[in-house]
Length: 635
Image (cartoon, rainbow, N blue to C red; front, side, top):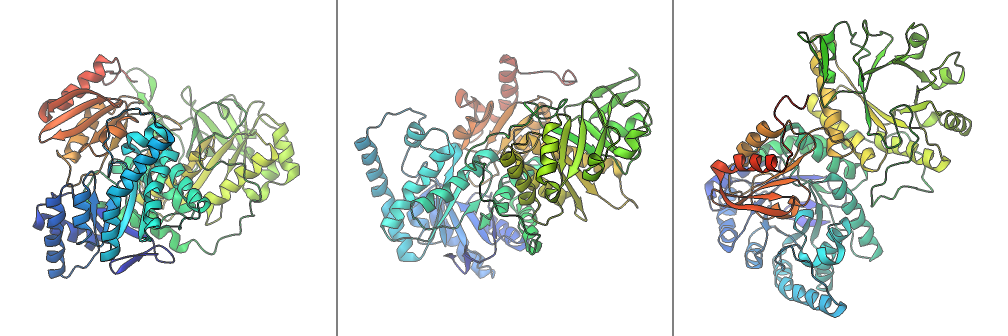
């Protein structure tokens, strides 16, 4: 446990929620008023950037003014590049955050060869530069977050460990070891990345390394950097944060959205409050042998059945059991738009692969590429079964009188999977399992199914099914992103199948179908298991931001979101910008007041572009690289 002001973190304490101000730190009243809005929304720690000693010194005025207004919420100073600002802030606020990637190192994107002695000399240099801050924190009772960012690893770390989760972990542990040698333990750790897969692997590896080295099990701050805005930002954050919360990791979270900071708080609360009703849950059998390597991604081996499994992208099944398909427009929420003038369907990038209609078959032939799943009893009496496939329960499958030659779905949960049944389905190369869970701890329950299949050598493809009832649209987005995302990040799942049960009276089934479809394709995009559109790596605003990030992100998105598969980074400043550009195809980074630097991958293409011309210049760069298509051509 770490005491941060009057709100302790870690141990048996609740998962704490925090956010970060976006107003210039020298604007005392503006920062105070924004902090109050955050606190009133439920923010338990307020983080404020201190890019120089002047901002660090002004934290005293901000803190004093908040206390005058009756607010004693702990303040956290966010420090990059400037040790003297950190040392000043540590005397004022309850916690300082330092980034080991730039606290004692300058990033020049250089590859450096180190001998063992030369590397040790570098560590001695870091120890000398970092020790004064540690001693001040000890004297003033100030906590510290050692926060690694995937986008700002030092050249030294990159040269030895590469752009990897291991490099992220080692970057933090170098500083942790110094702290422990100085008998300082009021530490919080974080391993943030814009890619949830890297983030999850880094946190898991960090916890493992702390244990292996007999270091203290410090509290963890969870967050996905540059998650973005609106639904995409919520999905990506839930995939990363939610997966780790399901692992039992995480003591404080920050959902980084390109929105006003108080808008982050309800999202974080929804993610955290989900665990208030988790226990008791049905017992999940103990795993004595785990074939999963939690520290690196490897897709589960499965055979290919029709277009599911093997090397195929995860398939999407839409739930239409409660909504008959009577006309062409009924398919529009599923990504199939009917053009009356042309008498044809246009399949969009979010066109589903299967639609489950239960006992009510479609009244017309579905468009090419879309296949139908029916309950076994209904499927049996269909005249044309060429694009229709049966869904069995276990009992129906074992006593079937008919089956499809190519593809048969079986709905199962963990309790159905005895050895005889597993042997039977493994021998049948037409079987695809649809795995569901009725356990409150559903992700772990479904993960247990995958572990069992791996241990038994069963290679049948698996569709992950999750059903949610009595949840809001926002909760659906967050919960589904956690449950599907956590499994997909582990390489589990050959497809996804989402059901959102809503009240029929006064409900909009069309909008609900669209919500479910957008959600599952957003999850596949966030886990990078099926890329269907442009991805925006967009940081939240903070006091370092050099332009209106929300307005600029919206403008870039409006003009580029038809470009399938590109990753565009939009960064307010250079703290993480260049590093995160390594994970993006193009980058738009604030480099000065009214000035933008454009990147291709991590390479600078143009510096000092006036902000009023920068979006046009970015689009011109994309065009010159041959990656541009006009709106409408993507269909």
